[in-house]
Length: 263
Length: 167
Picture 1 (spheres, helix red, strand yellow):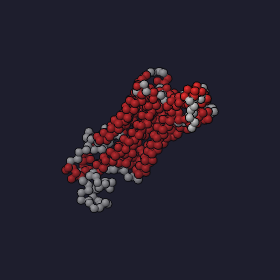
Picture 2 (spheres, each protein chain N blue to C red):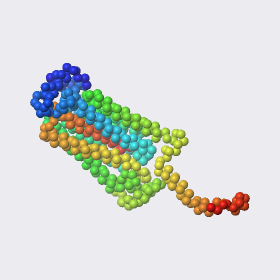
Picture 3 (cartoon, rainbow over the protein chains, first blue to last red):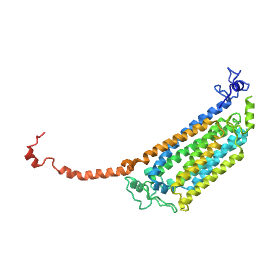
Picture 4 (cartoon, chains in turn purple, green):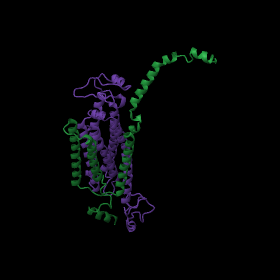
C-alpha cells in the first residue's frame, strides 16, 4: 500500500492534536495514536486477522492429512462408513452455511453504506442460520449415538456375522451391542468402522466448536450494531469476524464432500 | 482531504487495490451465492449418482469432488472475503498457507505412499502387527514346558566333560 509522503502530511489526523485523548478536531475516536490513518489501522487489523486464519487453515490441514492417510489405507472402509452419514442433512447444512456467508457479506455491505438496520438484521440472520446448522448437527450426532456409532473402539453398530479378528473389537461390540436395529438402518460389517468415525467426530466436532465461537462473536457484533457502534468510518470487528466466518464456511465446503459423498 | 480521497475512490469502483473498502454490489453477491448453491447441488448429484452406479468416475471421484470444493472456496475467498479487491498482502498470506499445506500433504504421502517399496513391512497396519506379536507370544508360551523339560546338560556330556562345577 503506497502512501505518498505528501499524503501523510495532509492526511495525518493526529497533527496538532498531541497530548490529549478526547480532543475534537478530525481525529476519529477509534484511531490509535500509532497509526497514520484509519486506512492503515484497518489494513493492519485485517492482515492480523488473515494471519490468524492461516493458523486455522493449518490446524484443519493437519486433520485433513490424517483423513487422507487413513482413507488411502482403508478405501473400502471409508466407502462403507460414509453410507452411515445422512447426505440430505449434510447437504442442507452446506446450503445453510453458504447462506450465512452471504448474510455476513451483506452485513459488511450494510456497514459500509451506513445502513444500521440492515447491518443488525443481517447479523441476526447469520446467528440464526448458524443455529440451524448446529441443530441439524445435533440431530445427526444424537441419531448416531442412539445406534451405537461412536468413535474408535466404542463403535458398536456392527451387522450380524461381522468377522472380528482384531483384539478388543468383538468384546466392545458385544458389550455395547444387543440393541435392536431400526428399520432402514444398515449396520457396518467392517470391524475398523470406529476409525472412520474417530476422524468424523473430531473434524466435524472441532468445526462445530468454531461455529459456536462464531455465533458468540456475531451475537456480540449484533448487540453493538444495535447500539450503533459501527459505521462506514469504522467497522473493523464486523469485517474481521466476517473473515473468520467465511473460513469456517470454507472448511465445511471441503468437509462435506469428503465425509458425506464418498463412493 | 482524507474524506475527499475516500470519496473519489468510492465513486470510482474501477479503482480498487488502493483502499480496503470495496463495496460489493447486491447483484454480484447474489451471483456468487447462486453459483455456490449450484455447485453444492452439482457435487451432491455427482456423489449420489456414483453411489447408485449411474456414473463411474473411477480414480477421478476425489479430484472432481475436491475440484468443485476448490472452486467454491475460491469464490468465497475472492468475493465474500474480498481478496480480489484487497491489499495483496492478505492474498499472499492466504496463498502461503495453501503452499505449506501442500508441502505437508506431499511429503506425508511420499512417506506413507512408498513405505513397502523397499521391502519394508512397516506399511502393515499396527493392529495386524500386534496380532502377529500376540500369536508369537502364545506359541512361545505353548512351547515353554517342552523347553523347560529339556535338561541343559545331558548324561553323555558329563561323561565327556567331567562333572560341572556346582555353584
